[in-house]
Amino acid sequence: MINPVYATLFLAALFSVLFGAGCSSRGPLETADYPPPDPQDISHIQDAVPRAEPLSRYGNPASYVVNGKRYYTKPSSRNHKERGIASWYGTKFHGRRTSSGEVYDIYKMTAAHKSLPLPTYARVTNLRNGRSVVVKVNDRGPFHNNRIIDLSYVAAAKLGILEYGTGLVEVEAIDTPATTRAGATAPTTPSEAAVVAITSSAPPQAGLRQASLEQPVSAYAINLFIQVGAFRDRGNAERMKERLDTADLGPVRIVTKTAASNPLYRVQVGPLASVGEVDRIANNLISLGISDTQVIID
Image 1: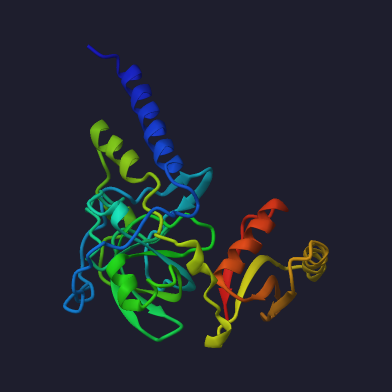
Image 2: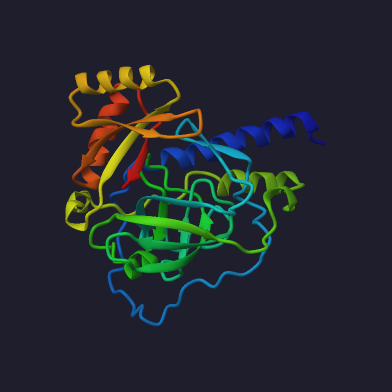
């Protein structure tokens, strides 16, 4: 009979190996993913239809670690709204299991998100052309620092971002009376816990093509910035600005968010000309020891 202690240690080791293997299987930009060679007619494919359903048994840990960084799952999607850079993923991951346990299908209106509970229904709007779609978030990712959502191939096609590889979007969760994470049924057996390790590992990155990252944004009256920090003390914000000015990263501004008696000073680099420029500056910031940044769309 297997000693329960040894069994527990074995499962812990298996969790670590599987999780680590998933994290190391792809880099920050996935360049070997493509659209289908013979695309189907997608005109008949409708938006995902929001409906009440319990949270997935898998893919909703309170937190998880990918590439050494810890991410936290939100207990609810209520009032979630954000703007940022979207990417997409395609045939390389078609037919693979997502973090929620569902199978990824490039022709279904789905998406991956780092923190929204699985599943969440969300409206995604392309800020450049006004197109919007409704998707079901059933996967984890993208783990590129400057991306907020990975869209399925068909969702990206309907938004008009396939040819560019990325897009500037707004993501707004659609409220449904779904179960919150606290009310979801948790895995109770070792085998189920092992499945959590598999499906919570690094999910598909988007099919990013390097040449596509240079789409300019100025023609769309949209400004891109990288926010480096937010400070309660003006002096700390000024010192950060001086540090960035010395590094010669480009224009740096301090944006003051006025509160009743507690202003917030946000230090931002930009405006930046393209998503490729955002990535270049972000990499330079990492070399300066600054990795916790945020893309801001004005």
